[in-house]
Length: 495
Image (cartoon, rainbow, N blue to C red; front, side, top):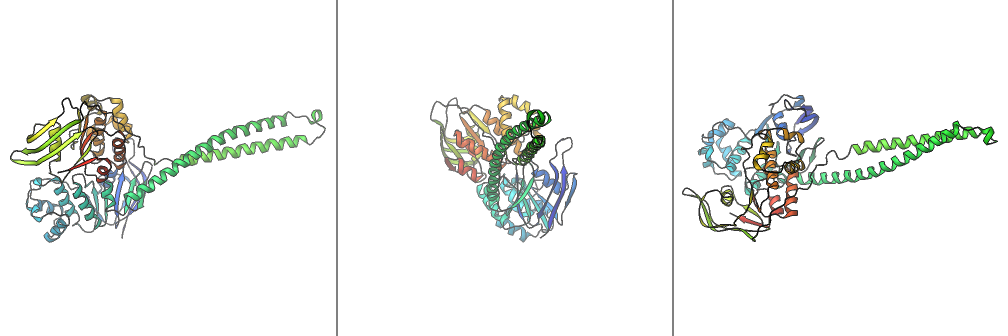
């Protein structure tokens, strides 16, 4: 066991007025399997890069071990995979590599294929195997699940459970629950570490949030009552003071001891007034300590167009081809109003090809494909690399309502300052949110979302779940987050 110490860490990107981290201090045990969570743009990848020494910062990071970052940068993807691995770890033994690959259900023959011929899931598994060959390193694993199908995620989660000594950034709840024993959370106001998995952390957070909300309501009522009482006491004190000053005992009362009595009464009223004021200030201070880490997750909404016919899409015995190669074969799929259909299957099974065909791409296919006349589709692609330029240009080009579009992004924790940046400077999760906001703004009969949640933070995933459950739009989607699919899908189609 060894400790990584972060002391008074402060960092901001050049040209930015806002600090990503400010006087942040905590410790990490190198034996922990540490899940790293927080909303998009909070600085998770930035923190990993700071550990790697990529940026200049103030404060101190002390570590007894070296850091290794996943995913690796591959300079020449045309090389055979074995040479890629040897570049990552020159001292690797072939038997050790084959052992790691077998745990990930990858055949060793893959090592003698060019790296660029591997699927995204295969690339992820090979790089993870190479990563865990490096002993005496603390591993920084950034979003390994985004190109893995559901089976691949379950497999990699079990693989990671058998390892130790890493920070894992992921937004897949089931994946995190399967392989971590601590959580590092970047909150709105601080950073905290808890023992346990993601579900236990979320339960603790919900309890704390509910307690703070209840305490906040209690203090609001107390503050209102104290303000009213303080005004009354202050008024009584003023009246008593005036009576003391203007009192002539010889004219109004025979007792000469009346003046000291009035003075004492005035002092007592003033003392009570000041005591109530101090209680009021203390209550305000206590209230100010609450709600700083309550995540804003306002309800989203979608208004789907009404289609004139119950059936929207029908595929019967459809096979899709790229040249002589079949991407998928003999697919039967019907989409009717109100359906929420999850397309499931391993990487390469043809899910995206079916989506492209429905969206109107000119693909070679056989079988019967019927699409309702005048059907309007709102599509979210896997790819976000094309997003460029100012957000105002994106709004104009896509003819969406600017006020609604920005309101949706704000509800998904977009800071207002983000609207002044170019899209290429957004984080991967923020780019996905841009596409989701655009889709929710579009008037359509059918939503088609192809892996919409890649890189999107967990709180936003829950917002989208609640949206789809509440408004029940007709949707066809591909998503490897099992928790999301189980909650949303009315039907699962396995390829």
